[in-house]
Image (cartoon, rainbow, N blue to C red; front, side, top):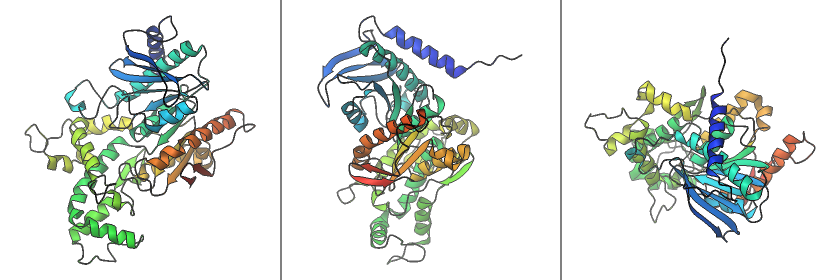
Length: 427
């Protein structure tokens, strides 16, 4: 008879033992992995710890007025352990302990470090979770009663991934404007930049036409002078980008109406994101696809980077990157807020994630596990999202109460999420 080994359980146990070994007999971890341990007063009085686990730098914040609960943060694609955004601020103000790591890699130099891998995020977040739980228990003399994953962008992707994969570690999560398929997302970036280059000379006219008529159709209502056939096709290629994840087809294209967020950022278009999108490709394609070198000279030119298409990459690339795909296999509740005009991570990523959950649990079952709110006009995060975090945490707490009590306490997610800067209907 075969005996199956629970690899995830062993990994979690190992991380927990490692965490305990790093916590001294005193109130806080004081081993060689800690380089800062001090009291800070903003945004609220708290104990601040900074150190290293494995090759991942981390921070832990322990508020003086603790609510008994814990937030584990996941950073954005370009951040590090200091890139907590409003998650830390709002969390501490509400009494949560908070922790965040750089996950052992940094986008801007990952290509120069063979030991650094994007996929190590999963292991490093789990390691941070168990380490922080042990530290919290020693510091406060009590275990955290709830632990939530929180993050935006790549952190939103990681939040979904960790809650899916480790439901015993997390009671739920806030997964803001996140990726659902890493390989499809990176492919959409190179598709965007090479098609935008074709329409760049006419982007002002395109934005003006869309602003004047939200239903403008570039095929049936020509500009003056008209776009060329090549430019029309390039524009349509940005709106419609077929993609696949978990057996589902979806559109990862950029939403009509978001054109004012497309150009390179300038005084005229301060919200433009072309430069950021191109930067993701420049720092990541060589790491994503180690086989890619069209002319065989050992270096990737800018034109070669823009031409990359994961559909033409060899199977090992797709096999490796597909490990990042979210599955929708939830056992704990997640709230997602996503900007309707996000040009960095298409709203289509969140729509297909909802489909993944629905495919597993049915529409009604999915509503017991996932609540999605699209924020009109918002781009890739922003003031609207940050202002809604308090309401999102309150809704998540009430939702967990409702589920754990069998409906006797708490409440399901609201049909309209009332954030600090607006009200957003549940999708």
